[in-house]
Image 1 (tube, rainbow, N blue to C red):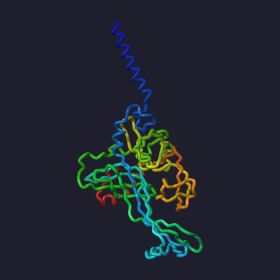
Image 2: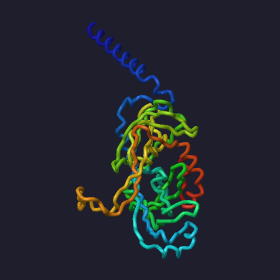
Image 3: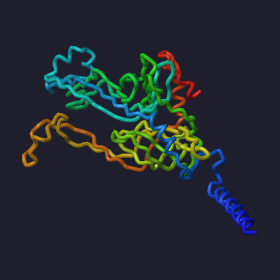
Image 4: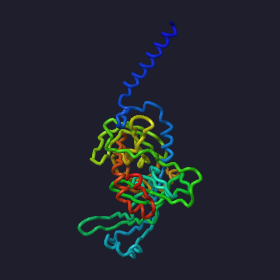
Length: 341
């Protein structure tokens, strides 16, 4: 008799547990992206995905020609390269940007990574002026880019990559490398499905993986303003810092482990102001704060980040970018259209 009661209690307990589970997670099979916190551990999947996410570091090297105001060099004068010989001083400088890139493609010893265009885009030439007006613009300096390096650590044969395609307006770029030999160890590639950003909804739960301030990190956020431009872009409240640009945005469809790529983080809301700074070669250890600074002064843009408003690029936009540059990729034997048919 006692054993019968135990069986009855066990049956009731199991039935109640199943019913509670169904009530707590009634939408896990609705075919939509989940808006609730994952109901079970997903560390294994996130660790696997994070291995495909790399830090990219781009540096442009410039040679700057300074002109005296009396020379009255105009923009039209730059058509003749001999005008550079009239410079009174020559300087060398570099500009560096770091961000995030993800390995989406590997085939026949060719690796391709997705990142943001602003990480690898530098102007060929930049000008500064003494004056601008009706009498014409008088140039103070001309900076010409001499070379550029794009480096991704942890690649099998060194980190130098080339820009395969880039669109500054969309802020999307694909960089790649051709290996000389097949890697001894399997190359980590993002193999989860490419999702649809247009199917994100208010409150969809997201993960973002990137390299803020040079550290690999995973953070989370909630979708706001889904499909805000009718092309699938969206906002999220995920924390964002320098280096997170290019980080992949993941959503879960019908529970763990059903991760999908739904976008790429690109920027954060910010205010900008210009400040005066010493040169980049300034020796801080030799500076005496009690004495007036008498060295060279430069104008630098300061960014005041407004955390909690992160802009993301949709997978629909990324897919269209890859299709639009199909010929560019195929010319170098990269066949990325298989990812976004």
